[in-house]
Length: 461
Image 1: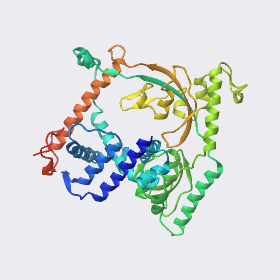
Image 2: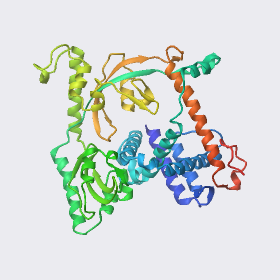
Image 3: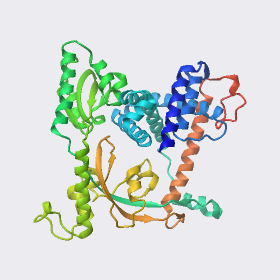
Image 4: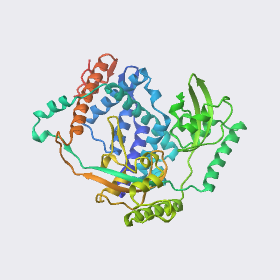
């Protein structure tokens, strides 16, 4: 842990120094977008912080990657993909990354110290990059969405493949969970609401603007834009938020306080355009107390003990008959609606569909750690984690099944082989698209890069 802290601290210092000391110059131009030398250096340091490795010379690979990103972003703008990326998605990604950094460093305070930024400023600094990453991801998905692989194609692909080239299927697990959201005290909720009422009063008195307070205090990625969310359809927001935002009529007014799964908001209308609304908001999240977390973990540990012993909990006595098991407990007790409706079973969703099987590295880190040493059928002790809404939840997990790693076979692992063939075809489609896009895009490269061995042909003319 100490080495991780020192490494992240060093990288953060280098990142700050890079931004301050690099004498900027344009090194590439793609269409009407410029790539600066500082962009290259900052990307290099960020990649080092995340442990990313480059194929080939980083001095060539990094600017090429940035250039390819410009191509996808340009196409995303043409195809209006931006409407498919919501602030809720961006905020969720930001919170997940912040929690990971906090876990590596040890505390929020240490993260702020090493980054020399408040959490709000860190969220703001991450917003645009994560939005671009989501746009690129959705643009790629659109480009390959029509690729279909048939069973015959899969069999032909693997028929003559050497034994040492057959893919290895890593260990996969199925996991069930029961979650409890620690209760937030009335005092904490009132503290948050009082803050939002104070902000509303300051805005109404003309003391300051909504945008200024959003930049200073909102705990959402939109804070850097003064809380502005952009034109969004009703389905792009959670229902509680959308119901209020779409009923606002006066841009000078501030909404009542709105509670959603993300926290508490106040909203201000900016404009309406057809069936879309542009609004700004301020989000505050109540802080969960240690005592509430301890209470929830103790409750879940007692439930797990009941299940192990086949004893019905006292609070269900008279209402539950039969042997008390994990599946029933998840249905009756769990706060997580997705897994509760599936008897606790977690779902692994991707662009290729949905399955109940996970590689350990694809599970939330806390869940993976909890089940890694369990035998099939065993239940973990209670632990805490951050869910997709950025909330602290307490969890017990059960290892439902484990399939050890093995060489893929067409009879047992057809889906794995199909995914491999489909991925190859998608990669080729995207490669061909980039090459064709380069041909039809204005490109100018600094002479220092003309001897690079690029992944995509056509950059140098």
